[in-house]
Amino acid sequence: MKYYIVALVVLLCCSCGPKMGQNANISLLEREDFNIREISFAKVFDYDVPDTSLFSPFSAYNEDNHFFVFDNASGIIYKFDETGKILKKTGREGRGPNEFITDKVVSLFLCDHRLYAYDWSLPRMQVYSEDLELLNIIQLEGIPYEATCTNDGMLAVLFSSNSRLNVLSPDGNIVKRVTINNVHEEGKFKFKLVEYLPSGLYAKFFKDPVVIKYSDEFTPIDSIYISNYLENSLSSISKNSFTIGNEVHFFTKENNLNNDFEKKYSHVFNGDTGYSYSYELPDSFHNYQIVSHEYLVAFENYSTSLSFYKYKINE
Image 1 (cartoon, rainbow, N blue to C red):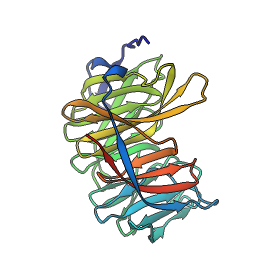
Image 2 (image 1 turned 60 degrees about the vertical axis):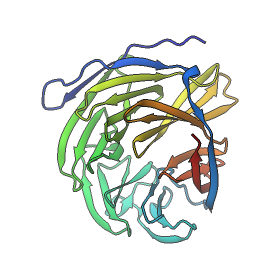
Image 3 (image 1 turned 90 degrees about the vertical axis):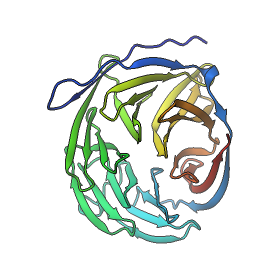
Image 4 (image 1 turned 90 degrees about the horizontal axis):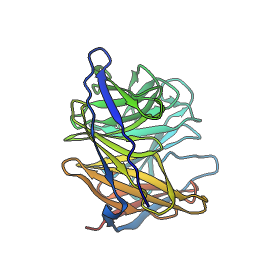
């Protein structure tokens, strides 16, 4: 199969200043260069999702072996221990404090022992302690699409309306505004996901197998196009990316042209050396999230079961 590289020009600029960007180095990660590793699983516990619930796969995990998961049907955040016991829950449906719009995706992440929760309909993030006490509500400049913890404990918030990113202090004060403009397919190419590593920022693009690495000053360094692993297949990138130590994992689904089979892979990039390895996920995983060096949370059988696993990626 032949692969063609589409030229991509990525320009970065501060919203209140001159352009900062430059053309990134463009390369293609060929299928024959994939370093496929085996991944093994040991199930810790299952949580059978009630018919009235719709759990989000975007979960969080702390150093005390506690999992935090959101139920999109009820607006409730659950805290589990490693045996599957529910330790605490909080939240409800609505638009007020400790409330969420339940027909939108809600994401959770931990940063410096605080749990941040946001949905795709209100311009805010709600801040909780690890005991699920509401501490603060951060008002944002737009609807958040993605948010993450930076390597120095700040918050990076990507807005849904365009490719605008704000860096915030833990209390919500704006430290930096960055606008990322992409020239691709007549401006329809959208910057979607961000993951911070000590060496800089990795970005993934929606429905296009490209990963771009930026310096910590938001200057593009490398632009890597990932070939499909399977012959005659189409790649679809979902809203899944995870930072574990100095690695970032990008989740990709591939379908053949007849759409009668599907394979799921993660491609892993190291902050210092670039592409590192890939691994295949089980067919039963409808969606998943790695939450630590040891644990992942998976939706299985199209969201009827929420499973918690220990995993190991073989060298």
